Image 1: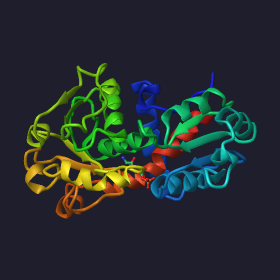
Image 2 (image 1 turned 180 degrees about the vertical axis):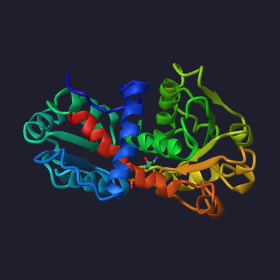
Image 3 (image 1 turned 120 degrees about the horizontal axis):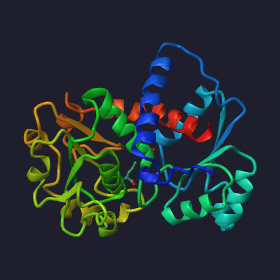
Image 4 (image 1 turned 135 degrees about the vertical axis):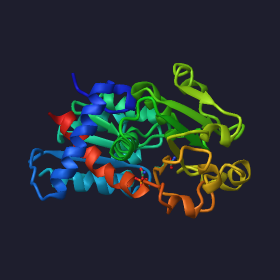
Amino acid sequence: MIKHFININDFSCDELNGIISDAIELKKQHNSGVINKTLENKTLAMIFDKSSTRTRVSFEAGMTQLGGHALFLSDKDIQLGRGEPIADSAIVISSMVDAIMMRVSSHEDINIFADNSTVPVINALSNESHPCQLLADIMTYNESRGPISGASVAWIGDGNNMCNTYIQASKVFDFTLKIAAPKGYEPDPMFNKDYSDNVQICETIEQACYEADLVVTDVWASMGQENEQNTRTSAFKGYQVDSKLMSCAKDDAVFMHCLPAHRGEEVSSDVIDGEQSLVWKEAENRLHAQKSLLLFLLS
Ligand code: CP
Ligand code: NVA
């Protein structure tokens, strides 16, 4: 049976913790100059119909570091972008490469692709979820604060793809997730229904952050929502993570953001550039977490 990574809860807690502890080891090895060519002669196809800095660079550099090759396929260049059926594209591309990473607008397209692929498919962000980011976030939390199980996590802002993935992760890793989102921007109830033991929807941002171990936010307008920027800027007024809000959390609380960030909107400069912020480690850990994921999927 082919393993795909489409949602964070596709794997068990033990499997995810194994990937994360291997990622921490791979990071140490890489930083001390150890060469690891386990994926020699392997090719990763990377299909993008949206922009990316971290995801593209981390997967491409990660494949190089493991002795393999990554192939960047923009929808502007491949026939998928001209209407070739997803299933046909999946059959053909998977007959030539060893794994496929996809960042596409429609989550359902990733499911169709995976159903027709003969090699592992990785969701590198869809409208619904961003599981690779969560691997890096949990790894980053582990490195600085220890296991996330039992912790209190505050999600401030849009009930978007990142929020959905935190909801899914809350059950697998068993942490409490307190969400504060403006009316009309709460997470899709479909993502809440099975998670009531772990997820609380809060009336205020202060309630969500109260005694939190980790405070997380994301942009107010995601990719593809650029024309809603003005409406969203009004709707999200009062939903900024600033130092006053951080003071509701525990003294040793940490701050994360998947990036790219908009300083002065969802987060103030003093928080994202301050001592509690882990955003640069979080971004770097995309590299190590995904190398570990690739080794897990291709082993
Ligand atoms: N966090 C994240 O996925 O960043 P990119 O959009 O730059 O890949
Ligand atoms: N919610 C953001 C995440 C970017 C990594 C988006 O989808 O644009």
